[in-house]
Length: 482
Image (cartoon, rainbow, N blue to C red; front, side, top):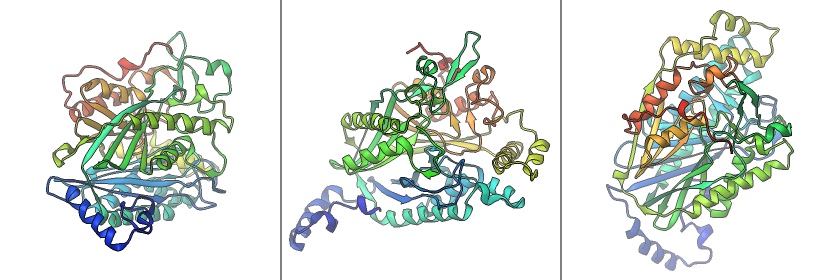
């Protein structure tokens, strides 16, 4: 367990309390949290995941670390096999890299891969990892131009070892709580449609055109969701979920967790409780309406997200927790591949020494996804049940409508979502989005086809026990202007 999150009786906290008094306090405390067969235990970890200087970030070489990147997570231990959820301050972890990460954490936690969720926050001044694509690039002698694979394996090993170290210190969780906090003036839909129903403008992360910034917010989920575990009245860990691209500005050559990571760190310091943040279904969401790219806006956006976290925190009402309140289910499926992926063309780009490493790297990822699709290699969605709440762990750069439709499927439950699991599929739009044009559903960045919506909705209905639900993500693609 990280030094900052030791048990309350750690010597750093007890100060000058005598050994006799300390022993008395511990003995008095133990009966209320003693482990029993129906208890839930929580183990947490938090390690540095910053890149090496000179190694590749998503778009540029790393010249330094402005603020540390982290890999942090929680292991839930109850009557069944352990559940692991992990969040990393990188742009993405795809294909074989994602599978390897899950396998190593599963082994460390003593569980199965299907009960492990590994997600990124999608910051852009941050690394990307993909063992499958890296292997193809290594055959061309350029893997190190795109990926730092030895470093990636080291981070995974350290994360696995952190889990092994955390398990003996797992704390009994007696209560849980969840709440939502409204985030003001951060999220906006990046796809602005014209009168013909096609994408007319894209509202990028930083939008300098004031006229485009002035256009309606569009379809978003304005609420940040928070799940907290407690030992009696003491918070153990808080998990937060909010849907937006996390960039204020980037290509600085300096690794940093950008405004969501800053907000997380601010709230962690304010509450003295480990915070693990997840990016929701923010594929078509940016802060572009509220951000012209000026560096000062990074802190402004961080403060707004932190305020949403604060509101959710203040709304928490702990309730008793037992092992029967915890559950995990998952569904496997295959997504239709984008018809634009052509193996011969991609192989030619991969082997073209005159092409840029970035172009060859993208071709490698495209090839891997195409081959996965042809082999019918499945993807999966995990669903964490905590009492009357459900927390969905999704692949790709998912459109926000999937998050909204999951909530509509079960209005009687508190439903949260993390996207940016397996980075392999790229953007995952709604069915209608593929006919509307725009960057997000273009062949350049979306490796799946429009039929993906029906596949995902079927999986969500099963996971949420909502087979009778008829609402679709496409139904939610049009909102009243805000």
